[in-house]
Image (tube, rainbow, N blue to C red; front, side, top):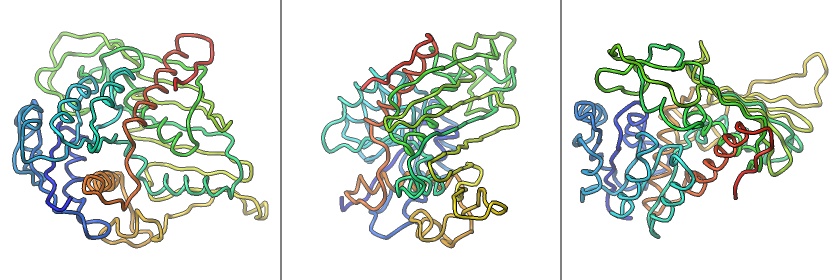
Length: 390
């Protein structure tokens, strides 16, 4: 692609703003050569929010419907950052209009919807899923350590993604609290956590011992529009919460490793805690998302009085540090918002026919992620091991 790339974001909430920020900054990182990026539209059913987000991030206009983005001739690539049950319809229409798509996770409500989305994408359309944690330098560095074999065969992972946005029973009802079992914390947080686990250790082939729990039984109906996890004025009427506040499950990977994972939206005091430890034959690795540019490592070969986990700051030799930050020096610091910039850059590079960064997850990856979630739900409904569909 030699001409510029017109981009749009459908969804002006918290994650939509992160995508808008990513597009605005994508051309400022890594090597030159990306075609000029035109920030065209932010679309949201809340027109005031769409206009505000468009103005904040330098987009030309705010639109009040996703259909306006589909019909626009000045838009080439689109992020879809709305409620999960809207993904199939919007992505199908965007693909039919010849637009490239970066869809937030989970890809769809069900694997059947995901298959329909894959079928709708014609040759030449870039279709990717936003598993943003893959772009954290610390997670990427842990993956490289595991792939190097220096610590021997990976044996076990313990991983958690805990948040507290649902702790308050007075937090307003929204689409996040509606839907079938597995569409709550598991879909919102577990989609990320299982992708991280597989990014590190390879595909999960079965799940057992799953539990899905709803702790807050009902929530007040909001008066007006809910943006992200924000509190708004609510009415006296309450509606039942239909899905899971908390989920835990054990997994077995195709390479023989095992793991225990848990997710929660009611973990008081944990606004956004994603952390894991991977234990191998000859060492261990750990990560905490509050320090995304670091990891910890424990290896043999040191005296017992000094052995243990050691902090590693990802150095400038790593591609997400070198060229990925305005001040690209070891120890300056990196945050999760930077991962959205790297994700947007990888997407735009691919749209432009360039291949500088590792590509974002494919729709096929998104389908597999849903198949893992569906196996977790099946396991929660029985006492048997649930195989992940191929």
